[in-house]
Length: 536
Image (cartoon, rainbow, N blue to C red):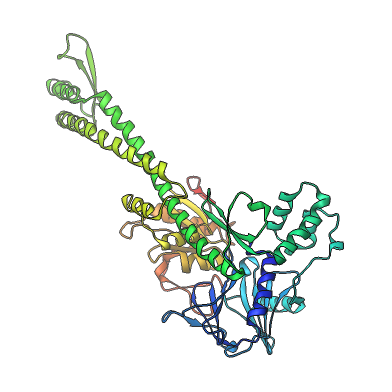
């Protein structure tokens, strides 16, 4: 609900009441995708912006302490400027901060969620954008109509229409409101009336936190929402107190859910491994040791040495250790008969040792299996933090935010697997190429790109720095780079490859452009080989 247009409308109205006429003391960033606007009075009060496209928000805090390190000042033009008013576009999720001759816009719009400053016709952004994109946005904002009141929809414009049709006409209404309308009535002719009731509810009702205890999630909305009927409610206070508490709880529960998922994944993997091991050990125990059989093979080979021909793959002879019949003994034709006998004597010794170890390991694995099963049964959203941390330590699971970030990045690229072991990631466009090369790739990963033509950056993940990557794998990765380029229809394509540490992105370079400090060239056929698996 916090991304909904009408929620932002309420925020703009509240900010207008609290902060109109206030002066800017500082405006800075100390976290990725977050910007803080601090005021001279009330002292230390701030507006916090998040321009993360998946978690965008704007909130007001009464207390905020700036870090002493790793902060950067943004938009110096706003220092000591007075905010004249806050307004919202009448058809879009854009909040405008009005200063004398300067405008600041907070816009929620997918990957272009950002803060935009327009000063004397010039536009700049908090997150870097193409100049072309900035000019388009400036022109678009100039055509918008901004209001300082609550955006009540004219009943005449929607009466009798279904919520689906209303949303086609008023795109800013949002999916959440469609769900709420459908939860209140199945009759389409009543949709408009219910929507108006919901908007009035948003306009005047208090804020509530809704807890989904089954999925360990917290939602925020206005009192009386039907879609959250089954949830537990918590009343905190005014709009911003409730919203700030929501952000704290959301971060906490998100981290907790990530830990629970890590535990569940590791437990499932270890359970499968343990079950497979138990089954193999059980088979060894049921079959029993083969030391007597292997000793018999060895002795029969020695007895019949003179009968065995060079490079023979087997020995067929009389079984002198039994009362009657012949026996066929497999031989390794690459070694001598004497060495075959020695090999069977060794197998006899190993078989007995393996049997004894299997019995010992079987009991240990059964204990491990029961322990893992117990942990699996414990996993639930209400599991206390202390117990979660104990389990993670017991299972040697690292609470690594960097690993989470890498996983998040990995999902943004095309993903291939070569020879069942080597992971290859492919950029989807120029901006995605930059993300792949500058944020995701590690220093010792191999980097590929088709020479002299536009194409995707390709990364071959090198997990072990000491490992020598097979030439066949490098060639297949180069083939993927050629395939994901403008030269994909050519017979043979030259592909540059080097370690990521030799790939440089210099300031001012356009998206997707890099420099290579050193490179090797491979001539390859553009293709996705049959044995290469494509994940997504």
